[in-house]
Image (cartoon, rainbow, N blue to C red; front, side):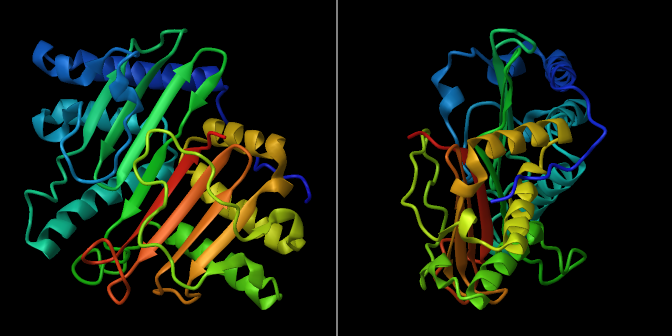
Length: 320
């Protein structure tokens, strides 16, 4: 497989990015009173730091609904301190969709766009390591920073329910269109060129297989290796991977892409399950030596774990 050609950006050095997110976390904490800090600030050694969730439930941290407008603004600036413009837009739209979902289900208590929680672990800027988490329904962003070693941005979860807004002012909105369309295009190209092994099941799972596990082991190898793809298909795979890494600021995304390249691009597998038409229930995963990306797309006319159909995507570090 040919080497990954990294896109060229005018980016900050990684240590400067770490300073930006540390300042954002420090500012957020400074806006809180002592009672709020007791919820939002936890030790770096807390077992809570390893929890990962994207379903609508109560969790540790300070929810948006308990924040003033200034505090909410500071919390959102913390989130955007790590995300790219595209990633920040996706995150904002996912939160906004929660209100739409509440109306669809007639359940505004369970589907509450204010139940997103910000949590800081350790002291922002601590060279020995610190972390933060922004998490709620269909959105989980975890950042761990260690001086000299960069920022870890796994696990990450971005979900969209509904997958496409059918009515109202947001009609036609598809928050995760890139993840869906690029994956579908690659799968279709592989099948059209006779690489039918990419389809490992006609029936897709109803959700991502890794779920909300604290530690994720490698899944069974499925699909085909990138080294078996044509040059154009390899490019399509790189573009799909970049859709995930591109949720983060360029200096973080480029570092992640470089790690993927170093681990061996030819060793990456892409596997597909389900239909090949947009709107069909489907699933794919991209698995390399050090990472795993999953997408599960469930629709109204398919077996689904959600009442209105949605798309779930996750990026995880794999433990072998």
